[in-house]
Length: 139
Image 1: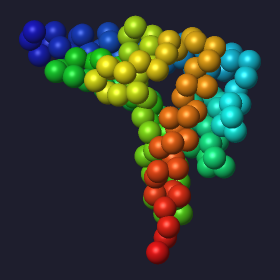
Image 2: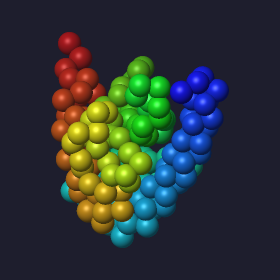
Image 3: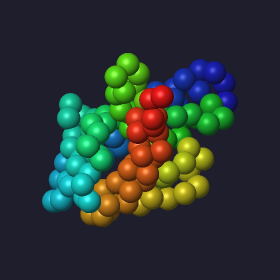
């Protein structure tokens, strides 16, 4: 593919992914139970936010490319730790409308419209949060 063709394909894919992101946020906002086992999720300003194990986390979505082609959207949960922003865990939304726990899209979490989506995301988020520097000893 020529570089002009690559640019055109990327522009089309980016628009498709932005639409997919909007659909995903709508799906999250429409869930009847936004709280699961002590983790609460909500959409704020078009992005997914959470409160898990007493820690506020936010995400920003960004497109991920492989071999020069946009392939998925990455959602990285980030916590603030006194001075730093600490990346906790990432999940990936692919064109097939499924969430994956890895950037290679090999490990499916569930479909983005699954009514149990949050109960599948919350344990992964909590486990990574508890293993992060947010809960590490300071000395």
